[in-house]
Image 1: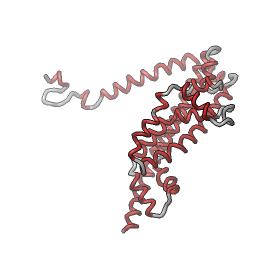
Image 2: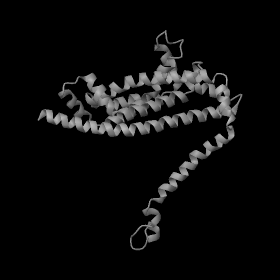
Image 3: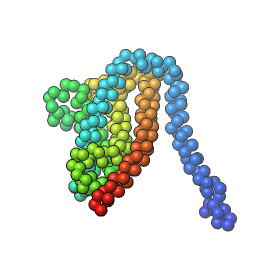
Image 4: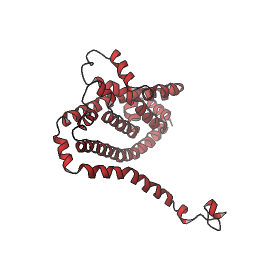
Amino acid sequence: MAQLTGQAPGGRRPLFFRQGLWRWVILIVAGIYFLLPLYAAIRFVGIKAYGDLISAPGFTSALWLSIRLAIVTTVITLALMLPTTVYVHLKLPGLRRLLESLTILPIVIPPVVLATGLLQVAPASLKDTPYLLALEYVVLAMPFAYRTIDAGLRALDLKTITEASNSLGAGWTRTLLTVILPNLVTALLAATVLTVALVLGEYTISSLALYTTFPVWLVTNDQTSAPITVAGSIFALVVTWLVLLVITVVGTRRGRRTGRQVSLFTVTRQDTRG
């Protein structure tokens, strides 16, 4: 019976389970699963392919277009989703379910339908520019941005710090910028990474709109040089990993600072009321 239940005689669990070695086994297996294909891809392309990638025709312009679109998309997405999510949490908590349902629609609706619908309502000045793609990417990024910001707000005592700020004379704008925003740095950085990753990996809409973004360039170039295409994919993956690493480090340090700031802010509020 002890062998069937995974326990050693005397009621003690075997050393394998007590020390959590099974976690290391899962971690090693997952690492092999993800890193082995990456290693094979790096061996396939070689070092020379990365030099050819930078000098490949169209690489610089396609990458620069995707970077511009990523910046514009991120700014618009955060400018829309941050005040909306904060307002719903504070003033209209009953609409959170509705907002969650609305923001999930871009995942359900096919991108072709989104692109066609946006063409009908977009300003005429944007229809002939690649920045029309930024508006479409904002819609696609809504599910990820909203849920990231929503998770960050759930981790805060939002009502308390907002009331404390108001009691000290701060208005809505100042409360949002100086109290709420510093406590959401990690969530906003995570939303930024997800948005940038979406823009750098989106192919369907940009291809239908006949704009050569970085993903479209990779697919087009694959017909002429597979090693350069693989090198470009690895390049995008490594850049995303580096950004995630920076966000993890910055977010951890910022979280410690903001935690101390909230504590001091609460004490100040209590002293003021006292």
